[in-house]
Length: 484
Image 1 (tube, rainbow, N blue to C red):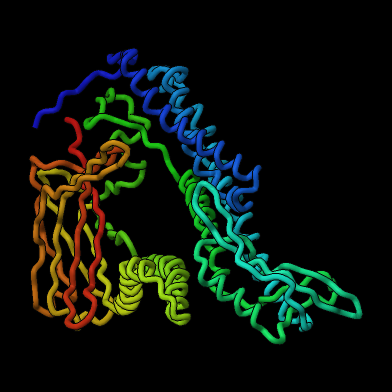
Image 2 (cartoon, rainbow, N blue to C red):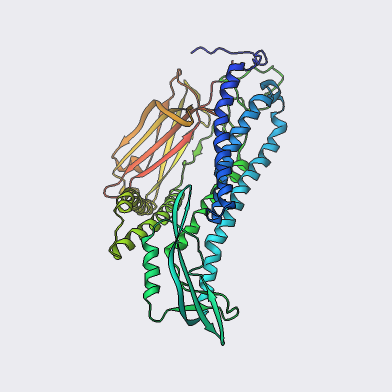
């Protein structure tokens, strides 16, 4: 295999053409203009009170569009050229981390703030209201409020009532502790009609502050709306963790630059962290890509998150059937989402059963293997290996390439090498054993860059009848041949 090695520093960055700059400016202008228009429309609607106050939460969306659009335009016309950017890359790494953390904090603070007003505070007030005094009240007016804006029409429960407490008369219009308006008129109309027709309606009064009263003090599905801001909290925390843990890797060509006889490169030229490759002749123990317990936690989180959101809409659909006014569009629309939720529940039980599977420990010797060399793989089962009826171990090499198609990022995967190392039904070989193998000399070594990867892994599959199979994947490293 031939490689064209380019001497470092010999390539000069060419200035971007005026046409490409103009085309890129037009592209980013669309983002900036769209974000600005929506920002102005939302702020204007808030000023004129045509929409609810909690709409402020969604201002983050046009802000993102504006940041992408105008930030891109600034980078095109006023950003540093490539040579200067590379020279100052190390100096700006710390600043980039700080900016990333601050960006994540914005999501966390916004999500936490709205979670407090939409979830935590209503739940606290609901719990406190359990000890409030019950008092008869008189319904003065009851109707379904209609609120129209550019996003459509929403409805609210508008009930005004009077009550007496400790010899004084009070008036209130609070129905529950969340308030606001939402889509769906029929459910709110049923509540209004119930209070209009009630012979002896009651409200619940705060003894410490008699002017504070409420009609509905129970926890309802409406309280689950407060879960949505938590998505921003989780996203912000993920951004902060990703920024802190991210280790910038130097972008290198496929082959390293030759070092002089009395010097040694300061950095690993192949994209691996120093010390990640064991150069000893002793065997190394391979680590599974993901533990069974980690898989279970991930599936449980997805199951709770997905079904928690879906349950809100399912509850509304069920209530429609109970009232004799079914919403068939909502019911049919929710069917695929419910099926995914049920599948997630089933997969949780699948992962729980998989916890009791035997686990395999793999040993690779030598610790560093090159294309054109041989190695020995050993395996040892822990747990009830007698349940495994068929064991297969496969060495695979996979290429991954990440590219953009329009605004979408796609990753193409191609398995260019596959070798079956073990295919056995013998009990003794299923429990433990070892086998030698050879890596072809003309194959590609492990490699990781921003958009391209060569990943070598060993996959173990233990077939268990009427039970989840014991499946594990172990990432391994095929090192590049040293230069002679």
